[in-house]
Length: 424
Ligand code: NAD
Image (cartoon, rainbow, N blue to C red; front, side):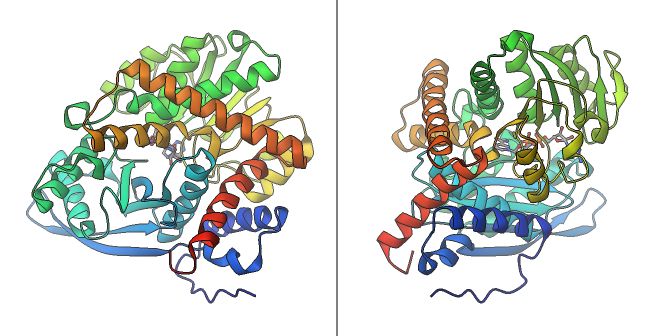
């Protein structure tokens, strides 16, 4: 009989939500008690203080975290989030989901995540660089190409990954591109990595719409979040012929029933920094946007936006979870009971990002670089395989698609842990 003695360290709604998902999946596959708790809880974490000199000469100390959930199946892998609402519990939940995702799609990785409590929009470019480098400096002994490999997430990007890689390389005394993925191409980044997550989301949407006998060029899409993932999903869906009728960022959304020109919206945001006052559409709140009638709803911002309050009001046919953890446990139940919405769970839906991060890591370790076509072709093969395995598991056990994906991911991690013994 296993029994966890766990502190309140990770206590938070989002960690509780990830734990509930785990418990449901573990029950569904009758995961032996002896392996449950060590599969469920993070292996280790590091919290750091990050002093940064500000433009006015003062010093601000930021707090940062890295949670390594699982290292039994390879180096851990997961993004670093810069956001004012980061908590260590959120980072732990995101690290758990990374473990299940990597295992589900068959990558030789465990799961991890990092975060810093900061609104990066409030920092100058120089301050952001100091913060990013200081974070990596504090993590040097905790990370590495064969230990733990970060990538971008909310509030971080290629440039930040480049600074972090440089800091790590300076410390170890030689160029070490494989320590971080999602880098600029000039520093060993992979072709296709920037668009990988969104392109993967759009590819899976197209595949599921085909299963539902809905032509993608007849579909309408609503996308919450217009950062890396949301905007790349919009571009790829638009290229497939879908009509994007609403998009949003942290300031709110914009809606146009006739369709939004995504390239125009991107050009606008490059200059205005937000979608506010974009004149190709009318304003709509982030809450109302989720309830719009559409073929596909794509939450691509933060966790827990689809709740028991709005789950009944969704008017989409397909819910594609581009964000991690956008649907609460209660909302999940409502959607399942409704039975009229197909769901692509996060661990499958946004896995294109970590798949191409894996390709980047392989290219860095072998110093042999692939063309964009090779990257995208290999990405789609891996997504097809993951989709087929999830749908086969769904059919075989009559699970929801989320439960199918989670049981596959969790089952494989638990099997590896059991085979290795108590230490890893
Ligand atoms: P990003 O920082 O590039 O973009 C985030 C977007 O969400 C921005 O448009 C921001 O304005 C918007 N946003 C922030 N708060 C919001 C709010 N309260 N309401 C509505 N919109 C809000 O981040 P990203 O990399 O695109 O990540 C988005 C989601 O995708 C996250 O859940 C992340 O964990 C997940 N994800 C990212 C990747 C990746 O490769 N970047 C891979 C897998 C999953």
